[in-house]
Amino acid sequence: IDLLRALGDRFAKYAERKRDFFFKFARARAYDEFRRALLHAADDTSREGKPLITFDEFVEVFTAPSGEYNNWKLMRDLIALRMLERGVITDDENLFEDEESVLTSQEEEA
Image 1 (cartoon, rainbow, N blue to C red):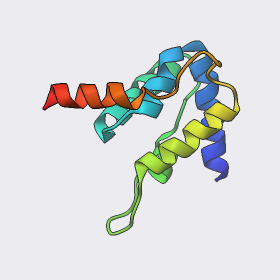
Image 2 (cartoon, helix red, strand yellow):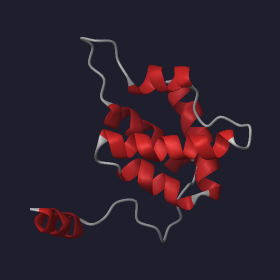
Image 3 (cartoon, rainbow, N blue to C red):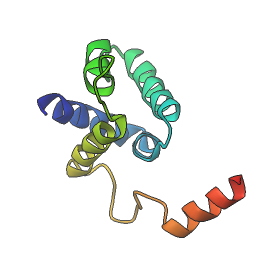
Image 4 (spheres, rainbow, N blue to C red):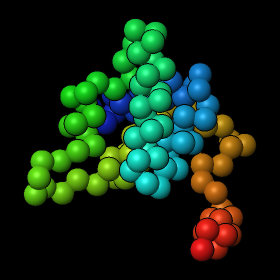
């Protein structure tokens, strides 16, 4: 739990500078999309000498040994909740698309 809080705090600080990170992170539907957003942000912060997430932290939070259950979406959502507690979005921003636009985009893909 402490690691999830720490990551949420770090990610919130990063999202203050890079507004689109929160939305890419919190809205990712597929694991590869999620990893891509996280790796892009990690690369960005590593260039500044401040790791956003370490190898060990990523493995601990977002992977599980063979045979064990791990839900990356639950971990992502807990971190996103911490980011929201830190005020990462403003009152005029919507966290999620409305259901109608989600259904419309799914219908277009079909």
